Length: 203
Image (cartoon, rainbow, N blue to C red):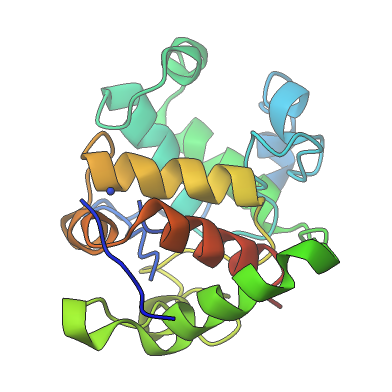
C-alpha cells in the first residue's frame, strides 16, 4: 500500500529531543517526597493506568526533568502542568526525574485487530519513508525504542493515545522541536496512528 502523506508529532520517527539544558543527577529519595501530586495521573511508580497520561517510569535520565522545566517555562503548553510546577526548583525537578528513572516501565500490548496497523508502523519506524525524507525512527530512538541517554527519549511501551497526541502536537507546531516538527509534518494522521500502535507494543 502506498503511504500517503498529508500536512502534523512524531513520537516517536518520533524524535523528542532533550533541550539544551543539562540536568545533574537528582536524589531519588528526596524526589519521592515531591511526587505526591504526580501520582494521581502518572501512578506512584510512574506507570500511569490512564492511556491519556504518559508512563514516565524508566525514562532516560534527564528527560523528565527537562520536560518539567519546559512546562514550567511555558515552552511546552499545559495549564494543569504549569500550575503544579510553579513552586518547583531545578533541583526539585532533578530529584523527581531520578525517582521515576529508577522504576521499570510496565509492558503494554497491542490487540489482534491492530496487528496490520502495527506492521505498517514498523516499516516507518525501522525504515522511514525515503520519498518524503522521513527518517527511520530507530535512528534516534533505537531499534527497541529505548532511546539514547542525554539525547533522545524512550518511546517503547508508551500508550498509543499519548503517542498520537504528542505526534499531532508536533505536526501542528503546538509542541516545538526542530527535528520532530519537520518529521511529524510529513506524516499523515493514519501513519501517526500506525507508528503509535507499533511503539506501544515495542520492546
